[in-house]
Image (spheres, rainbow, N blue to C red):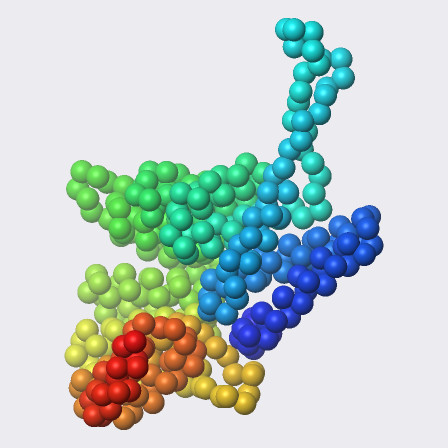
Length: 356
């Protein structure tokens, strides 16, 4: 439901039922294969719930986080057991730690838990969670990438670079290649000149697109680089290639192309691109198969500001913002834009409501 139709509400409800029924079936069967399978499905359901919770606010984060923590702690739990024949200096049997076998062995649980902590601003806690996950799953490249992101946000650039590199050595992936490239642009390896190695960054973006030709964030980041470098035609081609590839995260690519037009003073062309992007994400109160995408907020906000400030059309800007809010109901940018539209239309009470 969520991946194909983007119906987050229905997906959330189905996952909540999966968690509930998985836990109850495990208790009813009292162990064995049934309990193991129930726990496994329970774990996967909570990974999915955590992803939904961090991309829409439609799931109770506190409940999901609590359950993720419980499962992760059970994965990494150790108990003390007397080791036969071994004694310490006082002649007493030595205590040793023995890992408990737990049916849910999935590093994504640690990743999901860490993302929720990171979302709450608890970077140090997220760091600890990922460290424990990497200890249990040293070959999980996604944990290494996530840990690199946390280190980068904490200002530990060298550690971030090392973790991204370690992730790529296990399995090259588009998200990690992009993270490594963006790190180089923000914090160049060459600390003397403080100049980014743009040639290396380009190669990283191209490798990311070679691995995943539909990876929207790669097209967006690569196009943004060329736009900032002044290579407008190359940037335009990258954005358009992403659109033709029917890439993931299409709103960011359409938005990047619109920003390119705006930087060239081509306001009407930018408006047309934004409208094309928004046309892919219509609203419907009755059809649950209409996709929702929170990144539509960027398209809606930019188009609305053009209508409001360039075309002086507050009425149309308001309709555009409504479309954006249908996809991302709590966007501060869109709510502020709605307040400005209401004020421009002379509806001071409506503007006050939006500000509140």
